[in-house]
Image (cartoon, rainbow, N blue to C red; front, side, top):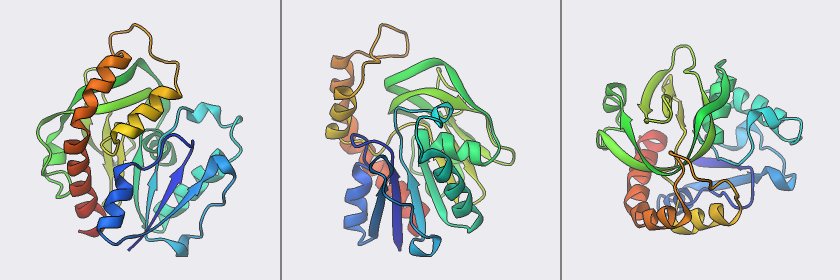
Length: 229
């Protein structure tokens, strides 16, 4: 299998997805869009991962790569490629599928639990997830559920944390892929840590990185089932 990823900022890479691809002998390529690298041809990959970033879809005038990327993601879905979107990537998938993307009522930054819906339990790639799971969040926007999509998870701060569309499109608003180094990179490149109910402080966020290894295992199990089957 050939997996391609789209990266939007230098400090938010695919994390443990890179480790999984190496372990599973997946042919991995990437487009660092912030560096002006081109999007691949559809024939050059079998599956796609769309990563996160601090920007939102409303910032499309600030980032020349965003509109072409949205069109490219739509083309990948039409070509029936497997597509996984994480954080900003999940919002892009919602937008491509016709749903509204907009500011959430609360920024959600830090380690907070999600609750998996019954629909998630019926999916082979999510069957191993516990009903409640503390995951890493860093987002201020959310999305409506696209028509025809299955809602998979929610949190107290954000109703739509994950969805699946058909058999090939999976969106995760949260992060299971982060390693400690990814969390530290996000902290180094952000000034969003203010005193708010759904925003943890730096010490709390760093303390939560002890969960990274366990979450990475769950992510790799998801990737095995979703991308390889």
